[in-house]
Image (cartoon, rainbow, N blue to C red; front, side, top):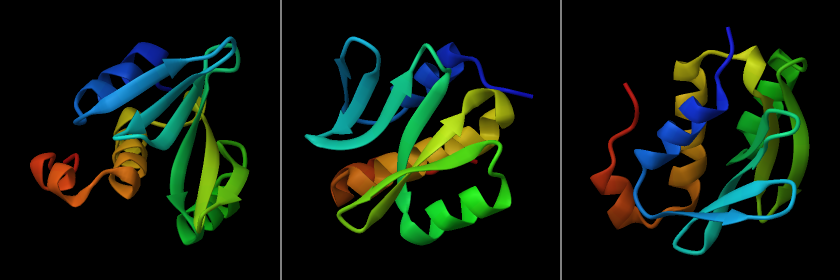
Length: 114
């Protein structure tokens, strides 16, 4: 179990108009100027935008894998430990984070993961 960081990055490449920004200790990801994710290489964790109800459900179900990062603008961000989940689950979470920030015309162009 676990998702290598290079596989996480490949998931991002499948999405439209993803912009990467590098900081000293993390990378951030946006779509058309709206942030939807972060990656911290040192801890092998990602932060992903989710709905408040999804944030709550993920953290309640598996607190060893998910933790509350913050809430903002009606969304709940979760920290995801890459070593605690399978690639298909992470792929769905990454897509959902992107979808929550992407304009509708982009969402229509990129089908959800199978």
